[in-house]
Length: 101
Image 1 (cartoon, rainbow, N blue to C red):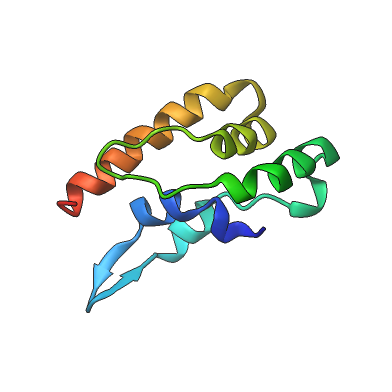
Image 2: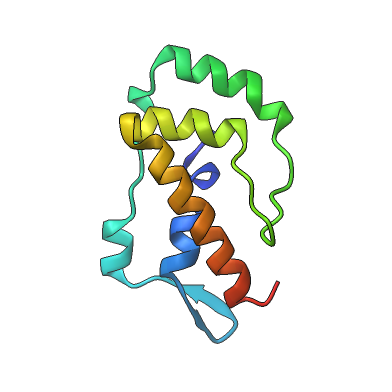
């Protein structure tokens, strides 16, 4: 498991189209949260290991919070997890409408 598993929403929203590729400005990269994977609680790690095989495709047209999203949110955001999940769901909807998916 690495940063690619949890950062696509943040990177997608802050990146811009440029000549058929996605581009992020340095200020956006510096503001992107990347967790220190060495500090993840053992309990969280075990939950993630159990859940990883159950991860399914995320329908951007009607995004739903998955159990793995809840696990990550609790680990990263603690008591703010639920509001961050709501924000992520709204951002996914935004990305879908922006790209006319």
